[in-house]
Length: 391
Image (cartoon, rainbow, N blue to C red; front, side, top):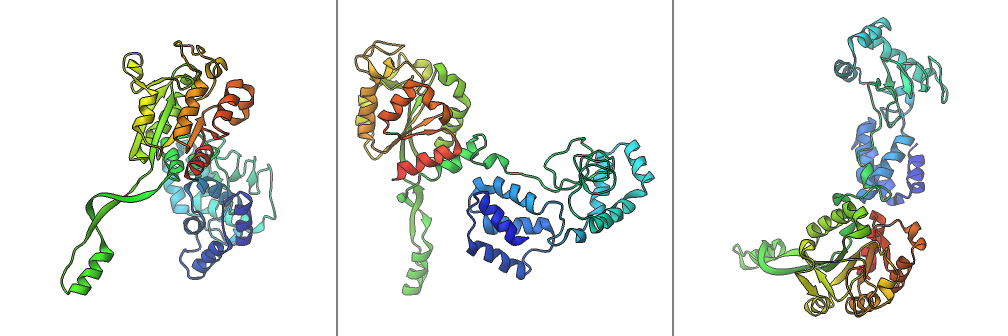
């Protein structure tokens, strides 16, 4: 069973090593976790999962491999928490349902019958009224209907009558393939880190304090600056027009970036960067900032992140006067080249799904100008973008 679990995790692309698996086996031999599946689940997750984004895949594999078990062992040895089921029944069952349970012999009889059927049953069963399986009227199994139901190995209920849910995926929103969220984006952005100790000495330097005290014979306290992320980020955010469809994703990214990066500067543009950008969209025509001034103000050690759908008329990129909002003397491509020329560490995050990029000529043009450093605005895409900025 445990070897199968290891191979299933690998097949699901959870990066589990043999060393970690052997560490889990040593912990089991040392009785770190009891025989209950819940205890083993937490131990296994601690030993085998190194990244929060893999928690959902781990939960799916765990629920599949250990489906229906309450103890780590054979299904026939399962221990059913009857007292827990009784207390939960007070919350979820009607008086009519409780009378039906009593007609079946009460909780003790139901739990005893479940143990017997676990011991007698050989293999999977679909439908029917006796064996433990799916789609039937037995009190035990999944997808069926019975007021005294004990649901085993099912991620959701069908008739809202099951008493016990045996597998619950609590971290499904952390998977790379799932929707964005500010917390999830922070996790992806953390790859872009360069720690340094700058500023006033406000943190105790324990190693130097111990060494100095031992050397001098009296308490010798040493302080040091706090260790912080020294990465400097300059964000250019497309706003308005077709980006209105992607406001939620862009807002979550911006919120996460402000929380994650101490040195963050940002400006807005529309469709393509031109000779000016702005800080406040409500005053975009009265409080504009020269793009050249931005390039002079922030040195080349900043990392530039463009956020936009790059969906526009190709003339906005290639032709003077192509902007839909003003008469631009130079094409957008010229300004994009100037910006990426100063900030060689630059990427473009696009909220449009990557499989649709080939349908829009302007997206292809921007990708070429960015030297293919365009990434989808997904957790996996942000992770790849952060890797590109660190090279």
